[in-house]
Amino acid sequence: MKHIQKFLSDARTVIGQIDPAAIEKTIDLLARVREEKGRLFFLGVGGGAANASHSVADFRKIGGFEAYTPSDNVAELSARTNDEGWETGFVEWLKGSRLGKSDAVFVLSVGGGTPELGLSDNIARAVIYAKSVGAKVLGVVGKDGGLTARYADACIIVPTVDPGVVTPYVEAAQSLVVHLMVNHPRLKAFEMKHESLNRASLSGRPKKKRHCPQ
Image (cartoon, rainbow, N blue to C red; front, side, top):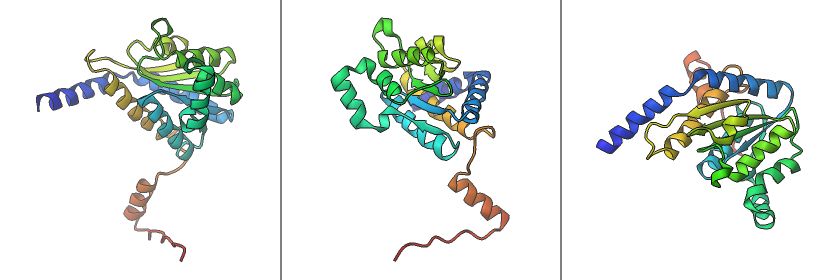
């Protein structure tokens, strides 16, 4: 119980220390990207890659964005890694996607890329490339934010409460913050299924019947 209680207590502290102003600034820039018909490219590795894939689904379905992530195309990502190297995989993918000024790169990373320490160099190079072509850089990252925080137009840093347990809190906070943003009134374009069913039930409207093919 001691570990469980500490973990949950630290999680509450982490969430409570996230800067709302940084979230609001990120939402402002995301709204601008959509208004300008720009695209949203999520980048992450490990748990960040899974969060990137989830984010793409939500921003497309709920937010009405055109969004992508290289981790959704294992064939291309593994081919680039095999042929060109892990460090350049994200950059070359962004080049192939013709990243431009109206687009944004959204980083989901624990450290944000620290090339001098050999950490997430693929993310660091992608961030530098994005800035070089005038694309916006956004992020939800941990620790000191790394290169992402230094280059980003808006960056949400997940605070470190326990230096011995960083990754779980950052990756969990990434998911929470992304859900917060995509459900914000400025970004939410489409209703989610369960919420729409609940509203229909509360209003007394009959639920739509589903017809399955015979």
